[in-house]
View 1 (tube, helix red, strand yellow):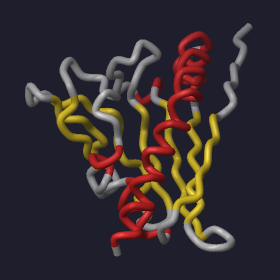
View 2 (tube, helix red, strand yellow; view 1 turned 60 degrees about the vertical axis):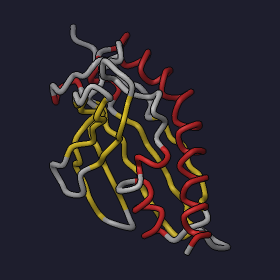
View 3 (spheres, rainbow, N blue to C red; view 1 turned 45 degrees about the vertical axis):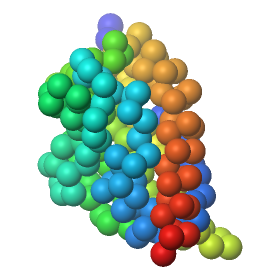
View 4 (cartoon, rainbow, N blue to C red; view 1 turned 30 degrees about the vertical axis):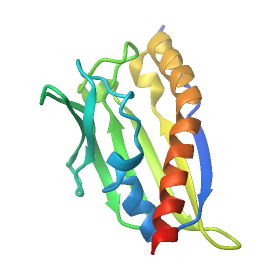
Length: 163
């Protein structure tokens, strides 16, 4: 008998001092300013993080040795509103582009009551990695996304305050 496993999506949110359009721009085209250089899946130190601005575009890191490690691909590109990217990383933190094993990161940007932008991140489809791999990955990213969102929020607020 086959059993279908389900692993709950991970949901995190933050309010940033920026408009939805500015927050989206910082999250995407500005990712290299705030994504930690220590968070890469390639062989060497990360030199640059990039999200290409179109559906099908790559989310990748260029490393000091000029190699490229693809983190995922853009599935939804709605500037100022929503970004969905595949997460093509195995539970062993190695590149794994097989679509049947990738999870997804859905990021939504909306005006917050009282000003600023509410950024809601959902990392989902962990079960595609199998029960053990999906459970491990969910546990790993549940500790990582809050720090990542904090770094993003600082950069988004800094960028908005420069305008």
